[in-house]
Every structure is written in structure tokens, then in C-alpha cells.
Image 1: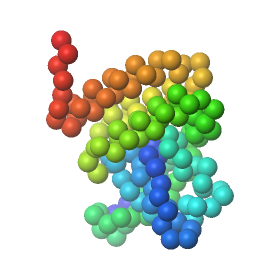
Image 2: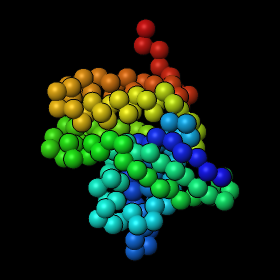
Image 3: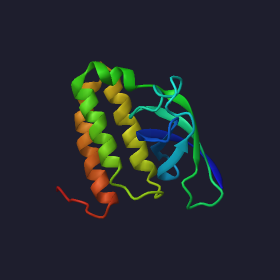
Image 4: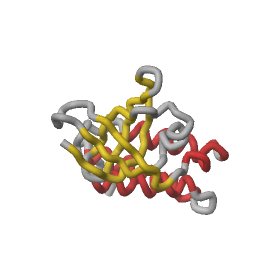
Length: 152
């Protein structure tokens, strides 16, 4: 089993001495976990930060296995978040909200919204509108989880 997709990094946790288990939200495959060999290296550590957009390739023998991820950076935004506390808090909140989705359940519209919000937080001129976008994202997420609100 193998696929390639754009992915938004949600977080990484250590696995062994050199690897990490990476959690990503992909456009066509939903929230996924995968082992990144060498993920704790100096080369990969800056890429594996929450909010970064990467091109991910996932491989496993069977579909329900953990699988191995290889990644290539598309948009490294994490450095911009570190300078502004509000942007960092917003991206951490966004990643926490995405973790509420069931694993391997595709939600393309939520991915597109999350990617736009992360890009907005990374742009110093446009960060003001990101909070409004995050509130709309929360409403869309509730709808996707089956708890949609009608605010009319």
C-alpha cells in the first residue's frame, strides 16, 4: 500500500533513538500517523514542526499498519510562528482541533481551511483575519464530526 499527498504537520513524538512518529493531516487521506526514520536529525527536525506543509509519501505492507512516511518541505512556516505568540497559539490550537478527527477519514475541505489558516498565521500582514477563519473552521469541524450548529 502506498500513496502520496500534501500534508499539514500536526505533531511528532520520539520513537527510538533517531526516529519519530509523525502525525499529519492530508488532503485526500485524512489524519495519518507514520514513522519517519531519521526524524530527530538536524536536517529533518526543523521540517517536522506543527503548521508546516509537506509533500508526504506513506508506505506500508497493509493499509491498517503504521507505515513509514517520507517527507519533503513545501512551505516551512514554523519559524514565523515563533516570533509571534498569538500566531503560535493559533497554530497549536488548529493542530489540536485537527486531532479530534478520526484517523484515516478524509476531509478535503477541512484540510484546505486548515492550510489557509496556517498560511494566514504565517503572514505577518494578514494574521488579523486568521482568528475569524479559525472560528469558521471550528464550526466546520463540528459539522464534520456530526455536531453541526445552525446559527441562523
